[in-house]
Amino acid sequence: MTSSVSRYELLAQLSHKIATSSDLSTLLAEVVTHLSQSLLPGSSCVIFLADGGEATLTLAAASDSGAPIFSLPINETSLVGQAAISGDTRLVNSPEETSRLHSAHHSITPQAEIVIPMVCHKQAVGVLQMQSEQPNRFTQDEVALLQTVASQIAIAIENSNLLGE
Image 1 (cartoon, rainbow, N blue to C red):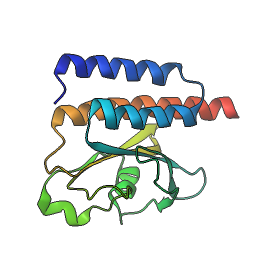
Image 2: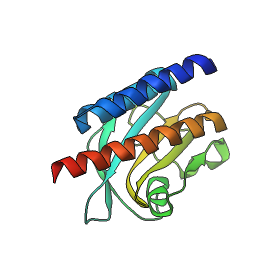
Image 3: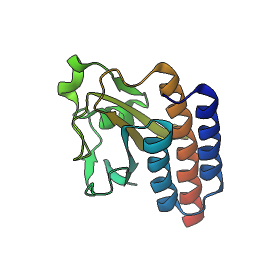
């Protein structure tokens, strides 16, 4: 496990990337790689973006480069949809709950999952999803860290949308 000091250094590096990147697609790809390889090694990461007027979330970046692009409805049938609707983080960290998990990644069978809405102006602009084959993988400190990253990504998405208008 990464020590607290180096974890904060990695978070600072990631925060700098988020704050200084001008290309959203490149940024999202870098974020999922950074999260899955450096910050929470052994986990997989996906970022879904909300489609403007449609009630769907579309895969925008994945740590598994072979993941197909697909959309999910924003409804109660998935943890991703639930997080987008409620604006609340969803954590499934025990093997007893894994029947509710569906992998967005072909390379793993999830035993733990955290889904964090990326919210800007009280509106979900996307969802950050981390999955692991290791039961009880995600600690409360990691949840807080990922919530911080998700908030920063939401601002970058909003900035990108404003610059595109």
